[in-house]
Amino acid sequence: MKKKIFYILTIIFSMLDSFNMVLFAIFQQKIVDSVIYSDIKLYNSIVFFSLVFLFWLSIAQYLADLFLNYYIFLSIKDLKCNIVKSLIYKEDDEKDNDNYLSIITNDITIYENEYLKSSINICRSIIVGLSSIIILINYSLIIFITTVLFSLMPLLISKLISKKNSDKKMEVSNSKIDELNFIKNILSGLFTIKGYNAQSKFYNRVESKIYKVEETVKSYNNYMCKFSALSAFFSNGVFISLFIIGTLLTLRGDLTIGILIASIQLSNNIVFPLSNTAKEINKITSTRKIRERFKKLLSDNHSTTGKPLGPLCDNIIQFNDVSFKIKDSDFLIKNINIEINKNKKYAIIGESGSGKSTTLKLLLNPKLINDGKYIFSNKNCNEVDLFSFRENVSFVLQNDFIFEGSILENITLLNTHFNFEDIENVLKITGFKEVMEKRNLTLETQISDEKLSGGEKQRLLISRALLRDSNIVVMDEPTSSLDKVSSSFIESNILKMDRTIIMVTHKLDKVVMKQFDELIIFSEGEIIAKGNYDELYDGCDEFRRLISIPNL
Image (cartoon, rainbow, N blue to C red):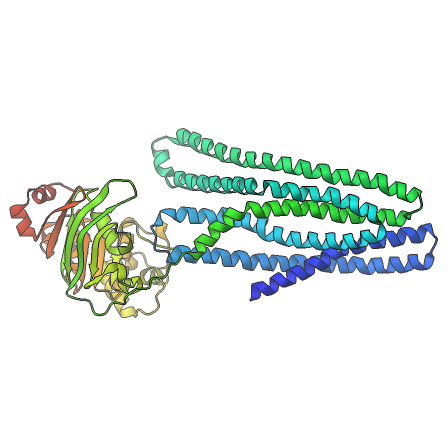
């Protein structure tokens, strides 16, 4: 509602500001004619009103710009917030997140400059043009017809090139998105690039990418130069014609000098606004595909409706012949069958690339499963409300999320419903309490990803997962950055808890492994064995090989 009010105010004051240009032409005519005909009384009146008009012109222009700024502020703020909201709530894979960032930084700038501002500029041009037409018809019909004939040509040209212009603008937008993602990827790997003395090679690659993008931009600008040149031709043509026709009419006595000057000014008010309108329409049509991208993005349904979960069954999770692949690639995991029982402890082990982390990802994102069934507490997971599902699952992933905020905010993820006694307990279990005491930190200390070591981050992330009152805790190498003693201490504490634990680990410590109810062995995307430590040690060659590898 507030945005609509500012939009209406912007239009009203833009119209008033634009109409002032017509009044200026009338003042010109009156003051020149009063001088030529020695009408002192009219001259004094026009001078007085001109001074009043000067103050009104400044106020109207200020208010028009002020309301326009407020309208754009509200429009862009709402659009950015809605895009970010869409990103936060969408249930798709996260591979397009960089494109969202590019849309926020690039496409929205185009939308602001070439759609919002252009729309208001067209309103201003229409008011100036219509008002000038009415006055000019009254002054001279011949001058009016000449002006209109030349002025309509840029609009016709704009209409003819609108589709191609839109395609070229979208090409520029996509190339800039690609450029931003490419440079972001390079910058994220600067440490490695410098470590291998590969700066020159990667600089050449970045330079080549920038060159291609700027070539695309140049091509678009060159294309628009043709349109600008044609528009300028017709704009200049109208003034030459008006000068010839106007002076002829004045010599014949059909026009006064004042009306001739005012007519030229009014013609300006028609030609330039119409030429600018053609350019602004061209800008607006060029953003059509960008606006369609916004519309699709914001119209996506991100709701998590489904059946709510009641109390969890003893047989919490079942994977029945679950397989997963990315588009046309080979399957990352094949025919996975797992049964997870309430309050039992499970370790998933295997070499790198064997499918362990992919399986955990599917456990946490049931919508990603390509093939097979995911049964959660005796319900098909595709029919379960995701919010209800997530209330029952906590997790610790590799390189998980730590943001700029306090230790308390990072542990609770901004949830205010936890009590400090529970927080203190999980901090002791993970050893992060000891870290805080050694570094003289409090729960209100501001941190970020860069301010914590790898081990400290993992302790904090484990604290976050354990703090939540969820029965299932999924962990992907939660102690990989900790020493053996700390790792064994934390894992043993976790395995004593009355919760369902599913843990991927490379640390095959015998004491810890014996605390798991079941070990699940992965190899090349498939499960090749299951059982407790003793069963696998006696009957699985692959398991004996894995535990014999130092630092698997």
